[in-house]
Amino acid sequence: STLLIPFHHRNRLSPSYLNMSPTTTTTKLITQSIGKSLRAAVNVRSATIPKHLSQSTAALFSAYGGAKPTLPDLPYDYNALEPAISTETMTLHHSKHHNTYVTNLSAGLEKLDTALSAGDVGALIALQPAIKFNGGGHINHTLFWDNLAAPDTTAPGPETTAAIAEAFGDLDSMKTTMSAQTVAVQGSGWGWLGYNAASGRLEIATCPNQDPLLNLTPLLGIDVWEHAYYVDYRNVRPDYVKNIWNVINWNTVEERLVAAKQ
Image (cartoon, rainbow, N blue to C red; front, side, top):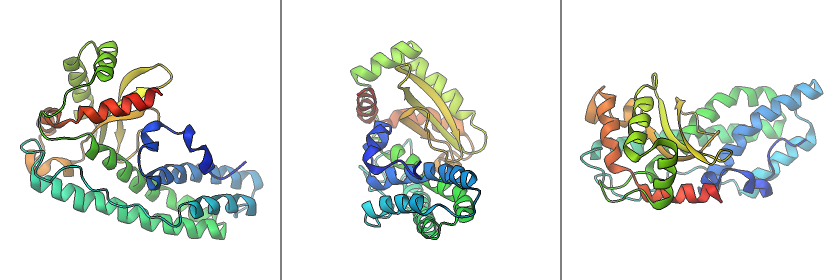
């Protein structure tokens, strides 16, 4: 077996991730690698990774030339989503919170590279929570920014409209269902509209903390960490979720759905 999915097999991953930067795809692969490394360690009953497995992972890092995760530029100004989301919230959310995930992910990947080079399974185990949390935060926010747009500037496309009708009856029913499930997230997390490739239908899902959506192709995400809305709505999450529907970029949702069906 190999420690990581080889880079040339990246076409097997969800299309939504392939449309993102190589660094983001690397994050997903690295997250998957940790579980495999644990199985490898159990199989050989050793505290170190077999040399050939470590080399296969080092090759993946080399393919990216040491590239680090970067904070993506927004496709709009910080004030573009007002009044649903204020300039202050967008500034803090993007330049502070998302940037922190990127910074911590970069640090985690550097430590992971060192652990892989040393064949240190114990270090890989210890790094798993931080990489999952910060890598998920980076992925989730990158998807989130692109599924937002200035108020009432886009509308669901034909593929999205048809898929919503099939799964939920109509757009309002989907919004009501997704809003209720997203508001009900305990603590911090995300609400998602995703595409199930097996059934060919849309589904709603929620994820705790910064766990990325992996069982569905993410089409539309709503961040319900308090840092996403507290400045504007205090602790009234339902009002935030109600108003965020005014700034959804349905063009992005349509593009992701079309890509997921291919």
